[in-house]
Amino acid sequence: MALNPAYGSEFWDHRYATPDFVFGTEPNDFLRSVADRIPAGPVLCLAEGEGRNAVFLAQRGHVVTATDLSATGLAKARALAAQRGVSLATTVADLSTFVITPGTWSGIVAIFMHLPPVLRRDVLTRAAAGLRPGGVFVLECYMPAQLAFGTGGPKDVELLPTLAELRAELAGLEFIVGRELERDVHEGGGHTGRSAVVQVLARRPEAGRSVRD
Image (cartoon, one colour):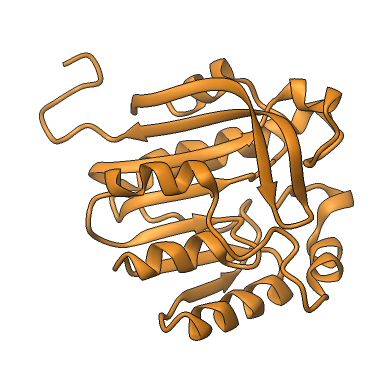
């Protein structure tokens, strides 16, 4: 997930090396609420961890690719998929070098993906370009106010973007949902309690349209 020396593959492999699912096996609430806005077609899940969101989308009929730093997390994702009767493609990768092929994806999902600002800008720029016309980008993450709650997420404010930053970094997409809010998050033991989050649902315009149309 967060790609800095303190949160590399060894950190996440160690964290996921438990029989329990650290963030649970059910999808993120925001993703569940907007899943019907994702067009039919392939979906890419970034920093997917143990696979709860990818499996949910596969159950909805999408062909899903999940990528994460942690081989341990993705092994649990494949096991969860098999348990639920679906399949996933998984790729162990560092997002600084992972290729997001332009114009390929009906949906790209980033749930609680916390990256250093320079890398986040690069990844989100590539994600926006990776969508097909009409494709959507779905994100929920903690924002700076989360530091006062201490109910999950990194403790480094640089890893916690604001909505304004995300709008700039996803330039060219049409924001259908863009909001900062407080809500109760209960996702396994890793995210639990009152939280300050940013939620984004943004669409790549159809050919011949701009975000101003």
